[in-house]
Every structure is written in C-alpha cells, then in structure tokens.
Image (tube, rainbow, N blue to C red; front, side, top):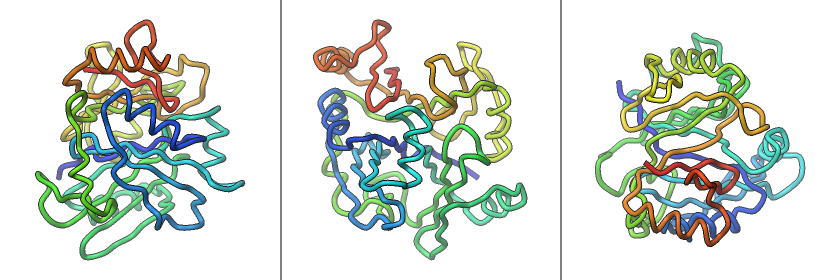
Length: 256
C-alpha cells in the first residue's frame, strides 16, 4: 500500500492576506474556493496548487468553531492538517478503528473516501487519509475535493512540490512512533538527527518545540526551482528569516 502527501492545510485569521503572501512569494495562484464546506465547520478556504499538491488556507468565519479554537490554542496562524492520499482505503480505516482512534469526519463512496482523525488521538496535528478513483499521475486528479480546472493554475517557476511536513512536539520521538503506528511506516532519522517517516512522495519530520508555541504542524519543505526569486520576494514582504526560511501563515517554509 502506498501513502502520498497531497495537501497541507493552514489555519489562519485572514485567508486572503495569507494567500496574497504565498502567491507573491512562491509564484502560486488561488485555484479554488470551496463554497460547499459544511456550515458546521464555520470555515472559508483558499486552495493554491503546488504542482499536483495543494496548500489550503482555512479561516474561521464565525465564533466558536473547532478551527477557531485550534487557532487560539496554537497562538495564532499555523499548521492545521496533514492530508494524505492512499491506494487502499478500507484496510487503513480498519486499522484506525482497531487502534481506537476517533474519526471526526468520514465519507465512503464509490469515487472517493475521506477519513479525518482527531488531533488528540494522533498528536501533532489533524491527519487525514483519503482515496479517490481514477488516474493519479496527471490532471485531472483530486477532483473529488477540488473542482474546476485547477490544473490550469499550476505554476512551477519558483516551487514545484511539497516534499516534507514538520511536526513539533515536546517529545518528538514519541510522536514519531505514534504516527508510525498509525500510517504503518517505520521511523528513520534524517540528516539532522530528527525522527522522520518517509512516505511515497514526502517526509514527515518530528522536531522539538523551540518557537514558544505548543505541539502542532510547524512547517513544510518546498522543492524550489528558483530559490533566489522566492527569497527575494519574501524579503520584500518582510517574511524572510536570517537563515533563509520563509515564515508565512505562521509556518516555517524551507526551500530544498
């Protein structure tokens, strides 16, 4: 069975403002706004393709929503969900149920399946494992979640893929073992000595909390095609750290 990183969701106060930052810095474009999000979520979103993956910016649109509470707990804008795609959904769902992990949102259909796991049971962040029918190597794909001709708005002049997600926790090794058990992939160690899990197209990296914020999804790595252009745009917007990391939407965004 394979598992791929398909989408990273941020939770932010102002989706349009963060979308403007990300579009300008990384040369991306908003391709879809989901007007059909369940009212119970109390969220609006903006989706920007990175190759055939997506950055999703979610923002609360009313008081007392789960997303709004998560935003408050993490102390402002930041990471929200690691959304993956698998080739066999039923056995993964059975495994999750055997582990006793709560499923907070689910859908089982002939064309697509969705399974969103409770962050208190996964640790680190929401983890979502989805499946869709049809080809996966070329557009149109992921069309069960993102409609319209989004692939016409793919731009890879500056970045071309999301290649890592960085989860922070006071006990990163323990969190890595938890995620390893959930997704059934082994824990390894990256070049910096951090616990890491390799999935089909990306790495999940587990690091200590060093930014004064609690456990959560703290960053992503993007494969750069023009790192100088990215850093120049980030510097102009005041979002480039001294070490070359871009900080946008409360996330550390590294270029590799």
